[in-house]
Image 1 (cartoon, rainbow, N blue to C red):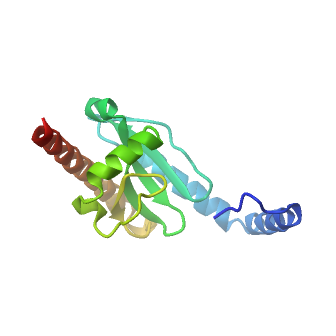
Image 2: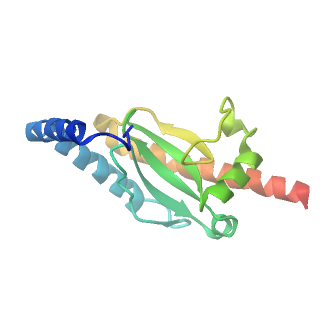
Length: 169
């Protein structure tokens, strides 16, 4: 997405394009309503989970984490994630650090949620689609479905982990 070694002239060109696009107003409006959507999803999230702050990202991913005591013990958390490039809403299982991510990638790499995923993702252990293509014409329904599916899949993943732990123990 962003090249760390981009030279100064290219950065200046990018900034000019950025300023020009912001002047039209559509990007600022879209970004505002997308962040507002994430804020509403977070505010309406079921009390059985604690939620963290919204991380706006770098126009790549915006998310808010949620967890319960069981996840915290495992050094895991879920995130409701807005993928800006696709405008899809996803559920990610994320780890506290890279070592924990590798540990749970090994545990979950052959799970139903990672079917077809051969390489450990950069930011998460697994990703589950919640809503394809943000659509404000059905905003209320979209928010209900996303919350319901996030909780459903989070519960299923936690049950799966608990079953694996019982088999090992």
